[in-house]
Length: 559
Image 1: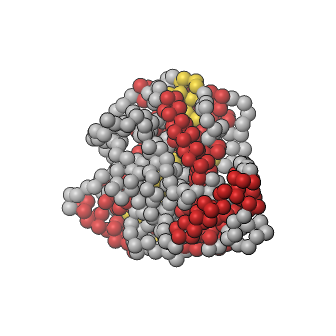
Image 2: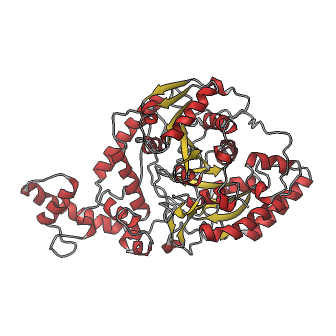
Image 3: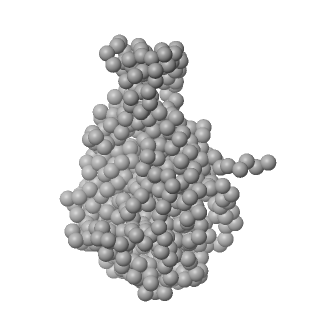
């Protein structure tokens, strides 16, 4: 009989939150000595208390636990080793669609080739694909355009870690030869792209943006990169990320926002978003754990798609949070992101958390058949950027899209659940903390990873499991809310939306919707239930075909 529950959470607790006891601190006693006083100091951190007799009784057990910790640490665990427990975002009874239908992108039969190379560089993938297929431009020429732009602008933006010029040109020439012989791999045939440098590529360094790993070479290639290569994509470079997937500060500097070079590009997919914004690549791969696609897409004025957790294999990607990491495209349009997602989608035997699900997109589907909701209270008041958010609502209404007001309410708080990310990150980079390698990271503030990883060691295992149980409640409640709508429109950063939907593994499409008073881009986010990205792409494409927000270019790089 099938059990009536769904596995939820997971992840490498390392016997949980390690207190002063496990760290060897004993409040005045010699290191490693466990006493009632050290137990009292540790228990205060956890918000619990014990009687003198209870503390005395625990000493033997705690000594055994400390011995187990010491034994555990004798085995070196590579970041690529996942926990034996696997997070599953599926609500009870939820089954993703398995039947894959033919994809219909609605691409034009012909596209005009611009005269200026800068205009070519800023073309979306779905137009470049037509130019390549019709042999109006070769992959080699297109690749050289982007390579030249990377060499011209990447130092200004501090967005590049590795330029892959030789291999890119060789691949581009091969794609041209295939096309000449009548072989066409699909809409990514001969299209250049970049990746965030937490994805491994055999024969290159994979730095994770962090000084301790700046010369690291991983002898394999990430599944998503293999899939893009097989689809005919031309990998031109590995772009920066904030160290260990936080922010835009990496070991080589701060990645810049092309719209304002005095401002960082936000993170952690900093280089991917900056490069797309500046026309250095037509699309790049980013990752998100808690905003790392949405935030830089907003800052840089590009379109980012965060897929459902499990839709895209994480094999070959740096692990930060096994239960929250997601890989997705950043590009010039919603339709481009859909094309890329159709390639990188799919279950992978090398990633136990990957989930088989169809991605069925058809341009022939009537966008007005979608039931569209919006979080009404998030569009009220005078929050910064609200005027631009309301313009999206007004646009949809003016085009005959009926909008249904609703509110984002849950019975459990999402904020504390973010501690799960911190515990998993501390486990993923356990030795970084224990061996004091964290001192090599550039960012050392109170909110930076070194301090966060240290503090996470004091989160008890019991609380981690309780958070996972509450996360199960959150998953069920969000499914009940979102299953009645095809798409929900939300400001990108209002309320707890970003936290909640990352915890539930829900997909999101983040798109430009104008500029603020300082001239920086702003964004709107479209949400859908699990594995319904096709609806996000359909509505996102409709919005972008009826607006020009995504067509704007940062002036310094429009040449």
